[in-house]
Image 1 (cartoon, rainbow, N blue to C red):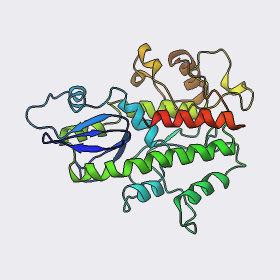
Image 2: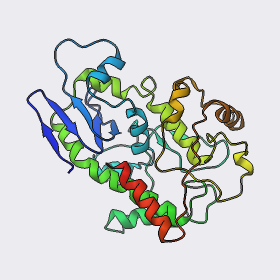
Image 3: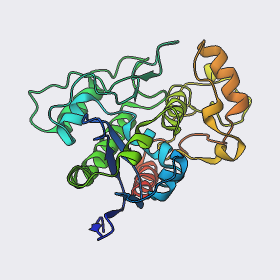
Amino acid sequence: GSMVSTQSTGSFILEHLTITIELCEMKIFVLLLSAALQVSVLGGKISPSCSNILDEAGLSEDFNFNIAHRMHSLTLEDIRYYFEKDATEDNGIPTVNFNLAKNAPRVLPNAYLYGYDQDFNTIALRHLDEVLRNMNKPDFGITNFSTLEQIVHTFHMAELWNNAKKYYNQLKQAPPSEEVCQCVADVEENGVMAALQLLALKIKYPGITSGKDEDPATMPQYDVQYNVAYNYRFKKNGDIKDFNFEGDEDDVLKRAREQLVDGDEGMAKHLEEEGGWEYWKQVMKDMDE
């Protein structure tokens, strides 16, 4: 089960989704981590290296990718609903831009106020409205996802955030050390921003890192789509922090196809029949183990 045990050492063994907040500067900086992490309230002598500090704190080597995935589609309304009701528009939580227009910034500096329809009393209908009121816009959301698939993705993320709430409250009561906070919050150095940039690239140009010869710009519509399961195989070929995600989008795409190959060909099945749903459902359940 999803249990949090508090030990005398001040450690938390967090199964599934966890959240660290940057209490170091007393502002909310929500970072969503993933399965089976141990976040310690460290004491005594600590190595000055952030890499060592995070390792000693028990964070998974993939924590930057897990953070990027959990935070990528957060809106300010979601933060206020699940975590901090007083969060502001200047929240410092980078997110993927829903606007897929060419050369639009793929990553935004803050989770922005989306404009949920507050006439709906449940978050489910607010999320449904978020998708359906944009269903005719070709440059919105996730490339090659059908309306049904965008709805499922939105509900999938809501499930993760809902699961995270109790861990957020646990960590507010007994936060990690200042050193751990500072290292986790340094998203440029610890690879969180690079992982988010890669995720944004895959959402906008699915198949870009597959290693296949097709130019994503000329791929048949609905041929390849972002893989909600994501993977980390490319890491064996280098550190994504060394990749420059800035500049003209055509140049970024050209370099990504050469330097970020990980074999990711997207979701294996579309949501067109019951078998497709069984596949998607298992993918989502596997991510929450």
